[in-house]
Length: 140
Image 1 (tube, one colour):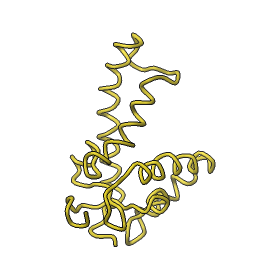
Image 2: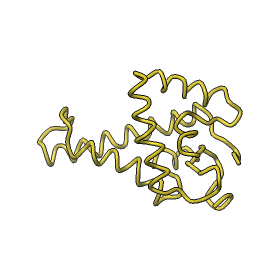
Image 3: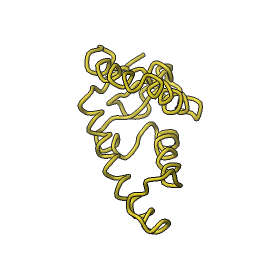
């Protein structure tokens, strides 16, 4: 059941906060490891970035730093805690689908979040999740 869903703009704002934070933090990690702030080739920075979005919501009740700052979090439709399988579906499988559709899936997802009453996107449907303003404990 979807309670208190978060819409497009707040989700976009959370993504921007995460992007700024990770650019700064991983930029300095890149300076330390590769002597470059922006590492162009596939590197450990890309793996750390993926792990941030994959694991942090599991350990922090659906939050990333950007989501926490924005007052929103990822929750499962069935009220269970997020797990690795859920986050793999949400991030990796959905990412592959977005890649296969040449980004059209991302655009469709943005419209879904903006126009649907439950504010769920393609990756939310794949993983059985939604983004909510409710704090942990309402459904977990």
